[in-house]
Image 1: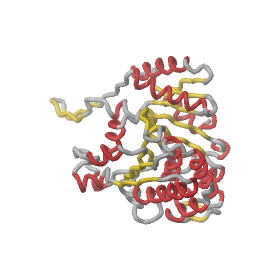
Image 2 (image 1 turned 180 degrees about the vertical axis):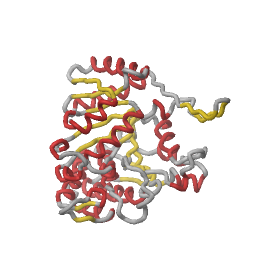
Image 3 (image 1 turned 90 degrees about the vertical axis):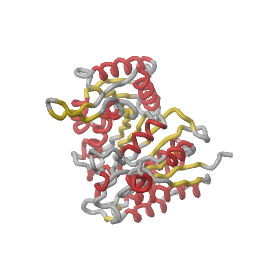
Image 4 (image 1 turned 30 degrees about the vertical axis):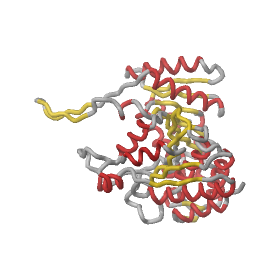
Length: 366
């Protein structure tokens, strides 16, 4: 018998609690329909944790994550904690969770449902049928390199950030990208800046070595500046895209224009650790931020969070049928013309966060 799934819930700040509540409700409905059990435990991270515990990631929250089969996370941050010189910032929770849990691969799918083609910021003929999986390296690069600091010297203020990568960091995320490509269209695009950066030259060298282990998967190398253009001119050409931390962060935000809103984008952060179910332990969160300007108004788009819940079912709970059911329910809601304000257009009915969540739950079928 499969044990009850232990899911840690970190609602976060801003609209985080609102969209995570809908994702959690969808997971509870899936548990009923597909007959599995979930044990929930909630804890603070981010700004709310700073207010309560004077740290963005309390040790109790980190230990809860370690004891769970998966983590469902809301966005963190907001103006009240937005002092760039503060030594304690909400984003530290994300970085430490990724590093402490060794979640080295961030999966960000960009799939454009037919109903959202009119919402795209580029021509419909370019985005129809787009289905890209970005695999972003998550625990190396500029975000973790040391030293990283502001400095005062005889010539005035200066700052330094350190970009570094090891062979093993590049190899493991690349191997995952190639493995995922085998279940898709067997194409991997590796994005780097090898004409300038030493780290990118190492990146390209390691990717080529890993590629030889997967002769059934086609590989191409693309410079990041060219990739930024290709994403908007020929996005249907790409299948799996693997890249380093900073480039992946920027490119996936750019790719949101293909689907119309960051509010539609889910993500999964994975490592090699296995949970009690025997699947990959993972942290699941929508790509969007905490959007404090609309927090508490009931108008946030919960679909990125709900689709993150589908990824949780797929990768951590061994429930692929339930994951597909969520994706089909989201597509049905979009086909029915229901929209939150961020993706609304003529002929659609604009509704709120809870209405979207309720409509998706009503369509879930076993």
